[in-house]
Image (cartoon, rainbow, N blue to C red; front, top):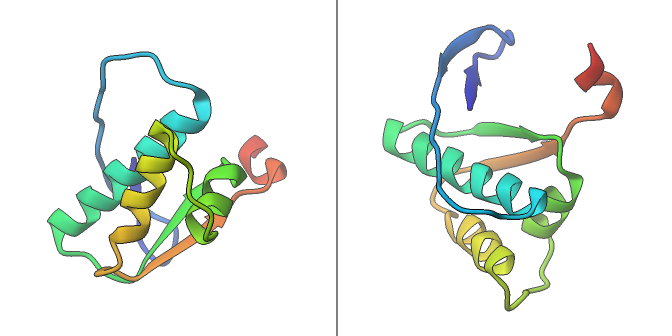
Length: 97
């Protein structure tokens, strides 16, 4: 996870590992949840989370629930409503730069 300021400059980073085998979609959702928890612990608000997994952004912003491990992680992300969260998905061009 990387934290950048409003100018896009690197401020700090954080790495967390987790044992197990999950799908890429679940890994992205777990990464978002860990980032959200990290931001909360640091006391930061009005954070923009940029993800390259549009399916995760759509799931968090949607209303549908899934009775799966992935759905449980998405529900946890949605329940963190005590911080202001802005989600955006990055376009492929931006990832290639």
